[in-house]
Length: 600
Figure 1 (cartoon, rainbow, N blue to C red):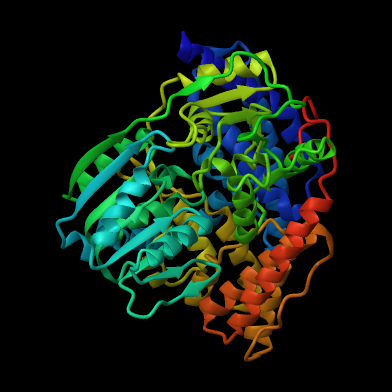
Figure 2 (figure 1 turned 90 degrees about the vertical axis):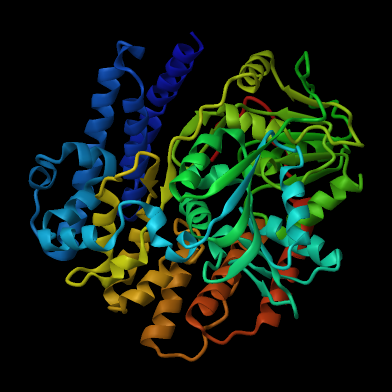
């Protein structure tokens, strides 16, 4: 019955999102059509996972989504024809390839229409059937994995890091820069020299044999004694999961500790055993009990140690303003905040300078805080494609931040109304659906294939089915967008390859324009150094964007070996962070904290 109810809820969410997606697609500019096409395909993929008998409206909803996809795809095809002076028809491209089209989209299918069979055979020759075989150095080792799996806030990463510190050499791979920075500082404070490498900074500590990195920055060419990979369940993430898969398959290390949610267990074991490696399981459960608050929480009566969770920046700032008007000091956390500001806000909460914390679900993955009660202000979130209800794992990840050994003997979970309480209790007690696939990214081996531009080869790669059922390919729409922008510059493929992986938000027009400006300056203007970015405007949004601009400037220079003043970068980041902190205090405008309109 529970499974049927979940399927019905999932269908209702998909059906309910149709009109919003239709309107967004209709208003979309040509440049953003690719994003809307991906959103529609994702909804179709979710529908196809549900049995048609889940609702008498299943076929109608499917047909409407498919018709919407056709409409958007025709617009994309018209744009392609205009740009490339071709005359492909929709029927010609999709005919006989309907299944691949629904799964991969018009652009990927289009680019495979005119690809010679000989190129496809080159893929078969160069790309191994099993992703493990892309890492011959790791395959020469007999590696042992220690799986630290279980609930949030149970000491999984702490135990793994303790082992890391006893090794002669080691690497810690984090999902977030702030976590890499936190462990970098702790390891050095314990008298163990440790370096730091993320997409935003690099600190090489003399005589260091340990390093803390964001997972994308893992260097596989070194041999380590011990490795720790955090939040391993993210190997299933369609945008970033390939970084975790690459590290698990490719690290040359005899002892690797994997920390994360229990739902990743079977997937991890399948990958490890496929590599011929061994594993040991350590399961973790909460030492501090987690209990539901029996009645709705009143926003007018928060308690010290409360953390209120919302799912948009606007809503977080609105709640902060609501509390501020009532003389209740609060720390604020959301995704766009620079790590330095997050840490300052965390510290004010830890030191009890601020009574409560207001945060997005960014709180679910990060530093452990002295939170007594987690209060959900909503049970829906916008996931970048559509509004949907929270999954069981998301609820558990966030709720698990309540309670702290030695500070709060019990953690509490609450909400603002009775329906939300019932929903959360159901999710907290639901059985997690095990991960079934790890995400893999494209292999650099495709650069060895001639005759086609990199964009077309990448699109072809994305349509190739995986031989092994426990792997799937990453969503490469962002990489394709970058390659489309670079096409007019006729850069060597190896340069394109490096540039398409630069870590920045390609949907931010300011950042995308800055990226193209750097390309123009360096590759066309032949300048020895890049122009430093300038603020796009004042206010918190302007400064947050400026911080990201500086990070893109830093990453571009580091990737291409362009000289830059790293001291200026560090000082400018510190200045921006202080300004954002000041603005946070001034710009907390009250917003009705409950039953508000949806905001992305």
